[in-house]
Image (cartoon, rainbow, N blue to C red):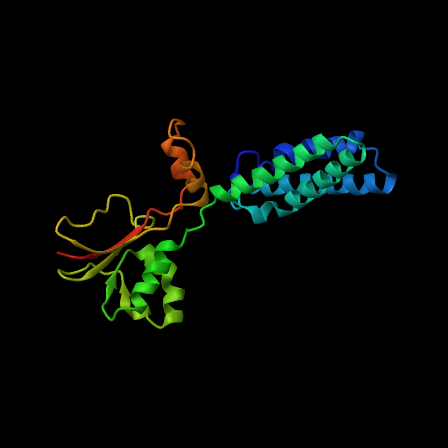
Length: 228
């Protein structure tokens, strides 16, 4: 919860704000009861989800209740700080929460199904049979059915002269296209907004390659081959 980009800085900033609200926020008795209830509910929920770690991976929907509760308490704490005249601190906390959220969104893979969408588009614009890996075919199956072209994509071994759709994000490790295969088409997502902003920095500022990759478009791109 503290290190996942899914939650930004919510638990780094929101939890201290929630604790401050309960201890020093000078809430009315009904408001304090509600805040304690939200805090206990989110704690029990988080512990319950964490105890089922082998069944529930760290994805946002399983921790929605704690996120909503902490967000609510953090918002109440920022409002209380503002009312107490601590405007600068309130603005800083709110800005950190928003910036953390935007950075988390920038780090999210927005093109997870990019290869499958390209495959469906290719299958819908050609009468030829396209070979690909089983994972890509399976994940694109529903979209292929919607387009009425499911029979144009197969996972059998291509013969000489066949079309092969290479999706590195799905293909098993160790697979390499043949050296005599001809590239028919290449496609890749455009650079992400975060990458574009980083590239605007002055040339003298070093940007780690790993950071550029992590904030990148989220997919390595795909290639359509004619087998040799």
